[in-house]
Image (cartoon, rainbow over all chains, first blue to last red; front, side, top):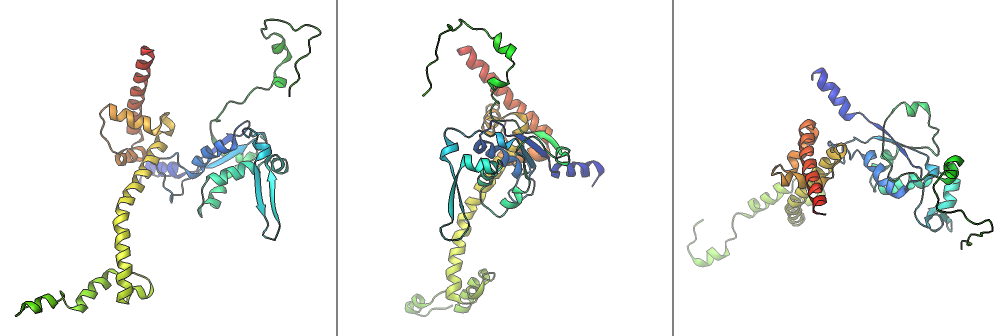
Length: 181
Length: 135
């Protein structure tokens, strides 16, 4: 094998590290995208038995956005194995206990069940905020595009921009806004 | 064999029993346990195995088609096209390459594959222009 071909071989089978920013992203839709990179399905050499998956670093998992009323309706089941030890934890409760668990479970679920799943999960690195160790950051070479734009929060906009925003009228001094039900 | 009467002809059952069973045993040689040595069990599992083999010939083709699709869409990941758009574009430009060849090109001839994806992209853009002109 010539030198160029050898390098080509390394480049083909080398593991790429991707970063995914979870802020304001739906974890269940994002999981489908992340799984594609974990399994190596974005490569033309993909085969279920070919170990060609990449590493994915998920940051800001604390900032995920669940759709609709999922925070209060979605329950996570756990059973220790002892009688009457079944527990159902609501998503908001689980998220306050461990901000990485909802993302982890969403990805674990969408990987599908086989013996490879636990090993594929080893290539997933979750971080609750953007504080990532330097040795992990050094490996990252690619960013996975977010599925939806991050909305701008009103309290993050400069007061100057808000004041200068065009408006058609000023509210009267004694105006009371309608109460939100 | 020579049959002197018609009665003998109807009662004769093909080759000798030992040779008949030997054919089955040869096919069942790799089965597990008594299924390879006991004729009644061997013939039973052999019939099943042959049915599976027949069905799997179609299934194997389906599995490979699925794999090729996956590999082509993997190769298209960096060229901004979906699988169906790519195949549709190639079909409309009369490029008659099958999925197997396209999957091989994606892995071993990435430059060729990229130019094919550009052709498909051109077709898509031309269609978009036509649609916008109509509206």
